[in-house]
Image 1 (spheres, one colour):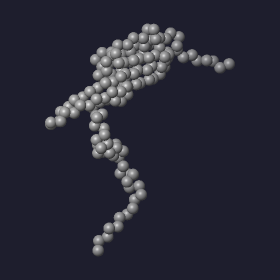
Image 2 (cartoon, rainbow, N blue to C red):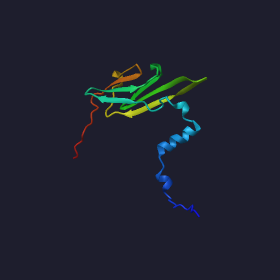
Image 3 (cartoon, one colour):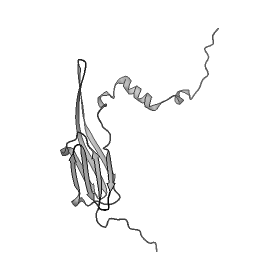
Image 4 (cartoon, rainbow, N blue to C red):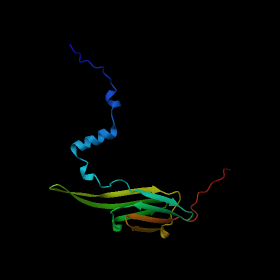
Amino acid sequence: MASNLARFDPLGSISRFDPLRDFDSFFNAFDMMRPLRGIDTERIRMDVSETDQAFLIRADMPGVKKEDVKVSIDGDQITISADVNQEQERTEGNTVCRERYHGQQYRSFTLPSSVDEEKAVASCHDGILELTLPKKPGSGAKQLTIQ
């Protein structure tokens, strides 16, 4: 007579849990993520560099028109936002599939010193937003002497 007994391991299913694989397979089963594949809906990617006079920012804004980009400066707080409208079309055999995405990308961050709003310059070309944000004179940190 063959025995069908197996040792019970209470943590067995947890130790085999792979969150990335299991999460992806869950959504693939329902095919819920298909409309968003290939459309970058993540935060705005950017590079920030600093010179003695200014902060230089390069932000990736692929497929976004410059009219849809807004930049606001409030002292040392910078906010970049963009309205994103994307449409894709692909053909699979006899099926034509069109996917649309409409939303807003948003990024806000704080610089180490205040920005001179009057002299700030922004340009957008080839999907890259470039900001030159001059530092406000006299906005350096001051160390106080304790008396």
